Image (cartoon, rainbow, N blue to C red; front, side, top):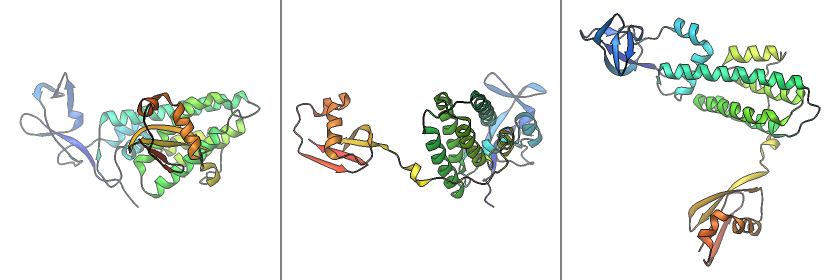
Length: 278
């Protein structure tokens, strides 16, 4: 069992130096005041681990009733690496709740696309992306990198918002999205379970990924001039040095560095970079 560090919250005191809970405080303009005494200005103390003695405790039932347990899990995992403390904030939990609504909307959009019953896949990007995501989610779970897991989910949501127009068959959409939902089960179990149920997916065995599909056909090459990075160029894997130089010669953004200059040497590292010494 590897648990998150302490959950921390600001501390509050009234003018009589009595501890106040977050529920007893409200914001008016730029000031915090006591709810039942608007003239009583509240002093904000340092953020400390939640404790009954300092009253800086958030009621879990209130949070779950208003935002749901998944939002709480998502916020705590996304805020900090698990070996560090979590700084609780109303904005953070609200943001996590909003993201869960986006994931729910995404599930509905995918259902709509499945119902369109496209007859052939126009692209293989979804299959490649799912394969890479499964590897990332697997590794980040194994390494306890929970906050990076949440970043992976944001990446996934952004990808689908653009890629859904690519017209995938129901089999491809359902097969790949269900794999993604299974990797989300440890993070947002209620949402994931509901979406899997709607998709009629009963087998929730952790999905495997294909190493062959992880190899990028095109990669970014770093272009250096006299050791300084000047550009990134997307080109095919295992490109020859002369072919990469030909692409560089056609790049408008690099002409200002090379025009009229004598090239003394080229240092080429396959599939990584080229350093042009002028």
